Length: 215
Image 1 (cartoon, rainbow, N blue to C red):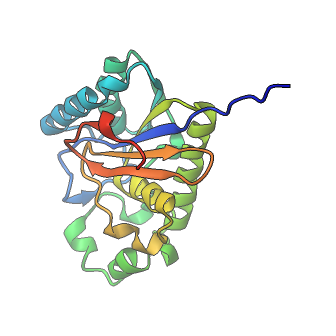
Image 2: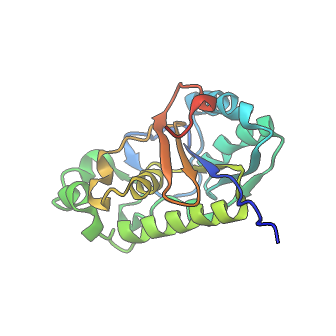
């Protein structure tokens, strides 16, 4: 009996949502009603154009349920002839009592140092731990890979979850994930095959994505 050839690797393009009126000033978390700013909509259109060359390979476009991610995913899906599928596993970390708080004020809290230096041991008050967040987002991405083997998947999410996926893919401990930068509408590309995942780029904001291949 002839052996069945396994499917080729699955490429996951993780996109952070575009800029909002509160980007860099508050911790919006899962609060509803936050939309893209004009700049954010421009960023969404730009990243959609960057992803457009993958149109014949993209199996699905996913986004977290929040407005800012769905608004970022919309022009991407339009370019690709797809519909946006909502995936709760792509949600931002649940910041609990910190949701909506001013970042400058949060940085004054003694807990802030733990968030930056020992995140694996931190749980947000009445919210989610970083460990739980990483487990959730990694499980979600692995689900996409199984469902769309050999294809390209676009997943629009948030900075911390994307950083957590990237850290997991390269085998970096969660306590170091804060050293990763994920800018608005940047692309983090990870190739998943039969062995270890390969991180092709992190925080890409201008490069031709079609040139990314495992070395």
